[in-house]
Length: 165
Image (cartoon, rainbow, N blue to C red; front, side, top):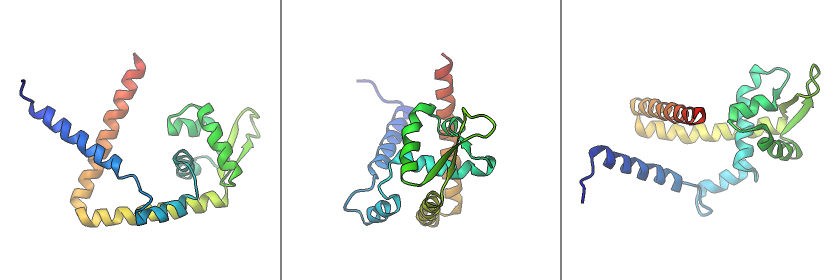
């Protein structure tokens, strides 16, 4: 039997840590779940992500965000977000309109209900993370943020390399 290297052991521990995070999904019996359900009002994860991304980039697009631009931000193909957009439009969270300069381009804007949803959920997330920052302390929180950003950069660069081959 071969002996595991230190890197192998660290890698296995990191995988276990990622699995633990994945298990943190909110349960029905968890008191946090009631707030989650109330705030998300039955929205799918993909719908929530699209709403948050629209809110994030809306200042850069005064005429509304094109479907192409939002799909690039979310790193998905435009046809895959069309049903999400339709669902959110039905729920009166966003509106679509034709670009006045190019009728082929569809522009998206958050409606009042969408803005309220994002604002309420952002506040909820900030209050949850605030507790984590207090628990870890500022220095460790900054380290954690930097590490997560490095992980994201690493994974993004690996994905980019795969697409080139």
